Amino acid sequence: MYTAREIKLSIVWSFAWKIILFFFIYSLFLCCISFFSGITLGISFVPIGLIGTAVAFYVGFKNNSSYERLWEARRIWGSIVNASRTWGTFACSYVHSEDHHALKTQLIHRHIAYVNAVRLQLRAKSVWNDANSTAHAVVKEHLVETEEGLKEMLNRLLPADEAAYVLSKKNPATHVMKMQGKQLDDIFMRGEIRERFYFQMMNVVQEFYSQQGAAERIKNFPFPRQYAYFSKVFVWLFVLILPFGLINEFAKLGPGYLWFAIPSYIVIAWVFYTMEVVGDTSENPFENAINDIPMTAICRTIEIDLREMLDEGSIPAPVAAVNNILM
Image (cartoon, rainbow, N blue to C red):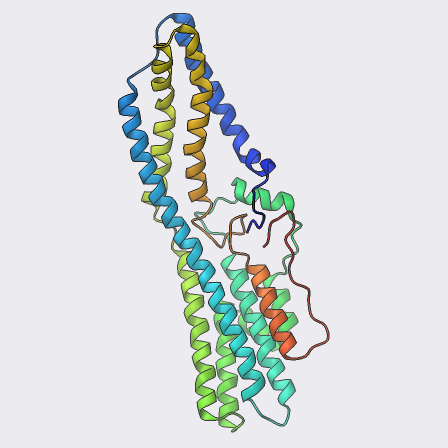
């Protein structure tokens, strides 16, 4: 997630310079043909304007839909944060046994393992995700990757037998939460938690499954390809025919004015192209790119809150933004 109020010009230029160069060469080529041949390569601007209006509406629809996916993903993780704090409070307050501290520590550490397992699973590469896009390249360029692998994380937070068990499953996070439910059931059977408190904690387990499933729905169901694909097709159709309309309009003012079509074209084409790119970089919010949900920072916030509930001495520091990028 980009955290600064203004996006740095260097980041904008990193994805804009190639396409601006293309627009310049393309429009210069057409203008040179028109100027030196004496044949104006132009058409009426009326149909081009109609196409531009239709493309703007279509791209706007795509961008609104992409933003809805991004914002829903953020709400999901906000719900996970709230439910995690509830889980920590319940574990510290409701469970009473001879070895209360060890038991609540196990429940809370297992939950820290759970949220981080969800994070790492969501960041797995999708077949439709372009890992070579500028949105990913900027993150790789500005950040030093310090992500802990799933195996290392589970071995650090879970007993060895539990870690080996969940790693043998296709969806480790699901089975980490299953172990929470099983341990709650054992605690209840031993009479170390009251019945109404037991049901409250099991409801929180259900809430985690609901939010995990909602995140996996966004991850596993891409933005419908027919909208994403044809949005790009329509933008490029408009961009490629636009200079013919501009050349025609400026040529009416005189031969020397024809060259003003070049800067006009670059500005208009770049605006439409950028609108398309903005939608593309927002439609998959769990792909570890510059505009994605800062799941590492959120998981660290959860870990800090829960470890402080245990009054542990060694509390990790919050994840800080590096070059205004928070992961």
